[in-house]
Image (cartoon, rainbow, N blue to C red; front, side):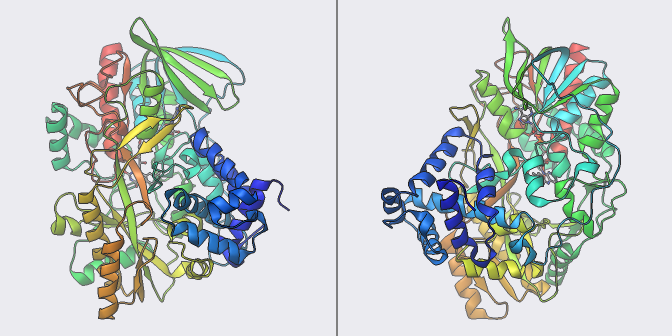
Length: 637
Ligand SMILES: Cc1cc2nc3c(=O)[nH]c(=O)nc-3n(C[C@H](O)[C@H](O)[C@H](O)COP(=O)(O)OP(=O)(O)OC[C@H]3O[C@@H](n4cnc5c(N)ncnc54)[C@H](O)[C@@H]3O)c2cc1C
């Protein structure tokens, strides 16, 4: 039973998108997911459109049908979706780009007929019955706290900064807008994990919907959900950062020493990278071609590296992944730091021209004021600039946002791969850097569960998508992780104070992505794939061995490109939106991590990067936060 006109419209469209995978629970879930999107204006607009689609006039204007959409048969709804997806009109294409993924995630992210048909086993048993080791605060009413330093965010940057400051004897309060979930809480139910552990429940995208942006949002931030790949910043990138920012620390050994310190603390090793099936295929293809394949360094201690590891993107149940939750935040708490969860920092408070604390809204709707001698913004490269902009800062805040736009080339294999399982990431290749230079993409694999798979795999029709989903266990991928060398990305504020992300793939990066995708196809073919396709919306496909099909495929891949409406990209790495540097005309934060505009307000997260790190960024973030804590402790101690 559906309960509102909007839900009825969503139900009709979902039936068209999903075909026989439709489940009556889907429309309600779609609405629930929709409510997690940032930006009240976008949300309200979409809700208004859904209402309009249930009127004759609205349906005629937007879908070319003079009858409310809720009455459509599945085949008619499917035709509407196909019409929207291929429309020349941007608003219609946007409808397809929003509603399609909502239905697919709602159907495949939870147990039900759709997911059951994929061969996915769901979570591997219950979470372990082990005690939680932290006891964060969750204010039950309006509250005011006082401390030396308030740190906003508890991820790679915030966790490290909080521990460093607390160890130096400073009184620290950490505000985290996510909740506290530890090993015993990691249910590994995909849809629930996105809701509970990810920023905006994974609904954040660039304004043009061309790239989906994923980040952690829980105590421990991205380090709880990430894939444990732990690269140090490449020396060439450090040199680039020094020359752009004028910050000597990048090349005088200081940042290198910080990288060593954090890598040591989080147990970075190449000795716990046993490849699962998808990484074995990546390695097999690369080796057969004689191309580079290396073991990934990972921040784990006692990692089982077995099938169960693929669920660690929803939290590591064994505690092997050395997230800040099980390292730096424990240290911070042991040094008397107070951790507050469910506390969304809305504004940095100023007094006499200096930062004097933070005002936050708790998830119970209360006002929390934390007065402090200094503030550290470490809310990640999307939320830190949003916080600073809400607090009245301007200048370069929000500019220079870089992503690592990612896509993948897909292979269908005769043997089951179960690309959701196995060590999170175990192998990589820099083959592309030999081919297209130092900014070339890296090849890595990622664990993919049915909800994400359903959204990532192009939807051409209900039957086509369903057929792919039924073959899910036999798919594998070569991920193509691109370094963003464009400089046009920007975080802006919506009217309600939430972030809007303006970003586009630059032509040079699109060319490198294209090279990555076609080279990845060679790897999959060499590994034995019987079919190869891209995640471009038309899903160009060929069978290795068929030379003519390959030529057509190459032509279509090139012609289609990777711009918005042509392919959906994913970003797991956001960087650079409050750049560090000596020149206020080109940076937001001074060489000592303090904002140019407001003394006492520091930044210690991925926002600081002068450009994209070009490798998975966690260790680089941790190293900069380590340095920020040292600088601040020397000043405030
Ligand atoms: C699925 C996934 C896999 C990844 N895999 C890897 C990998 O294998 N290797 C790697 O190097 N990198 C990986 N990354 C990226 C890496 O995790 C991030 O680059 C890193 O965590 C960024 O650190 P940060 O401190 O800038 O932000 P985060 O770690 O994202 O922390 C920011 C925290 O601030 C909180 N916050 C935001 N706004 C507010 C507010 N207003 N008030 C209070 N709190 C707030 C957030 O909830 C979050 O917990 C991955 C990311 C994802 C999402």
